[in-house]
Image (cartoon, rainbow, N blue to C red; front, side, top):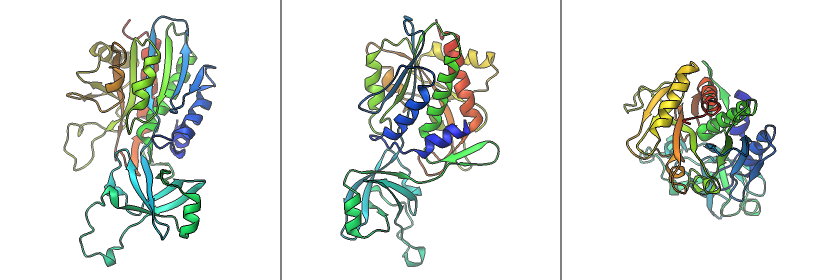
Amino acid sequence: MRDLIFDLCSVSGVSGVENSASEYCKDYLIKFTDDVKVDFNNNVTAVLGDKDAEYTFLLDAHLDRIGFIVSDIDDNGFLRVDTVGGIDVRTLLDAPVTVYGKKALNGVVCCMPPHLSDGNEEKAVSADKIWIDLGLPADKVKELVSIGDKASFNIKPKMLLNNRITASALDNRAGVAAVLKAAEFISKNNVNSRVIVLLSAQEETYAVGAKTVPFNYDIDECVCVDMSFAGQPGVDSPYSEIELGKGPMLSISPNLNREMFNTMKSVAEEENINYQLEVCNGKTGTNADHITLSKNGVKCALVSIPEKNMHTQAEIADLDDIEKTAELISSYVIKGGIR
């Protein structure tokens, strides 16, 4: 699992240009089924189980990551960029990035040295004032980089103590890893259902994958996997009791199916998988909000992996939570869901 997440967090795949992540996932899934496709939006779908079965499960995790888009190149070769997805702008100054022009170029987000500051620069920089320095002359930058090129954080994944991992794309490459592992588990069991794996594109921007791909199938149950919030010091919120290493979060929301939630909770208890509860009073902010509206409606459940520092360069999750998420959703499907 560690190696899988390290690989997934090391490929780019900013929302809208998920090609590298899509190809990695396709190559991974093809080990378990010969029915794997990547569409023009970079959504990856794979069919497992009994492909002729009438009952169909969908397992979804979005594979895009937050990043930047180049909006201008000034006369000195600095790149003005805007955010793609909800980046925490408080963490941007002096961040190392990679710009994907005609080739990958390493750069740094510009910042004002504190020695030269008059105190007015202490607030978070606004998204429209982000500049990237590639360390190249202007003519070379304009030769290699075009308006509309994407960029992402250039942070190598690292292991922390206590089985924790930190990386800049755990949202939602950790969810992708859980679904890929679940696909592996399902492929090794006799499942009397059709199982569609969807690794969906553009969740961070417009949920394109979640809004379009499910219309291709008659889905009986869908399980979405995404990241959600773990408690941190000084943060007083409904999530303050959520802990890393205490298991995946089972979500309760008006637009999620309560029978699926109850059954998944029972499966977790049968399999001795620790779980935590996440209560949403409306939308979940995930692909589940869109898939549940597909065609004439789809029963959906949401399993969230606890995470600290979401949408930053240094997201943190627990490897065991990711493993247990894979075990839970695969066991749920193998046991037949709510049928």
